[in-house]
Amino acid sequence: MPAALDHTFLATTADRLAALPAVEAVALGGSRALGTERPDSDWDLAVYYRGAFDPADLRAVGWEGEVCDIGAWGGGVFNGGAWLTIEGRRVDVHYRDLAVVEHERAEAEQGRFRVEPLMFHLAGIPTYLLVAELAINQVLRGELPRPATYPPALRASAPAHWHGMAAATLAYAKAGHAPKNAVTQVAGTIALAATQTAHAVLAARGEWVTNDKGLVARAGLQEVDTVVRNLPDDPAALTRAVADVERFLAQAVRAVTGG
Image (cartoon, rainbow, N blue to C red):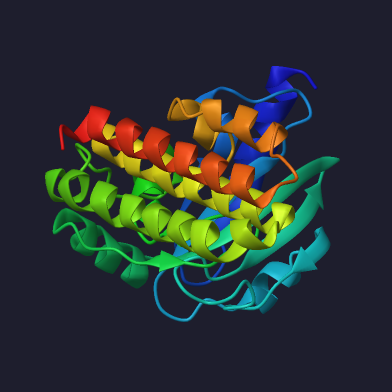
């Protein structure tokens, strides 16, 4: 669609979201915030609210689609949203509680975070994802704080945390799955460990992550793709493959941390 029509659509949609009770800001995220979208990319919008936000107010706008309740996406920091069609465009709306955002920003500044499960995120999400959104997303209405830099304390703590998870994941694969010739489970644990290590590498570089798309490639870990494509049907060879991945991922982390 013409850029002028997109601009009008975005402005109108942002206005309607900003007018919802308790909403203090609206931001554009995803590929469209980064300028990397394709013509068919959806629109990711976040509503930042303080206090009691009621999804029923969003339903009452009358847009086509599904509006979920608070906590319907598993609770935690990514606490719900809506999948809508607005003027022929696919729009995802994410709920963001400002009290939670401010807490997780303070935690990230001290190098503290948790990893929470979330659909479509292979290794889960770090709670500092909320801070990454503040750094990357475009504020359309209202005001939001924008981190000046990637917190030094987080750069120091996150790589070891993520790589520790990856090392444990692969150790279990080597001891529990490979000897039983469980090829699918070995493949899954290698994929998980590569994703965890990608988080470690990008945190060490001070690069924000908001989703899994392109994560392994961004971290320069594509060599793992070749291993997964060629996993053998043999316990001993599977064990060697896991060991090879262990060494490669550990080397990747050492290269960015100096450890």
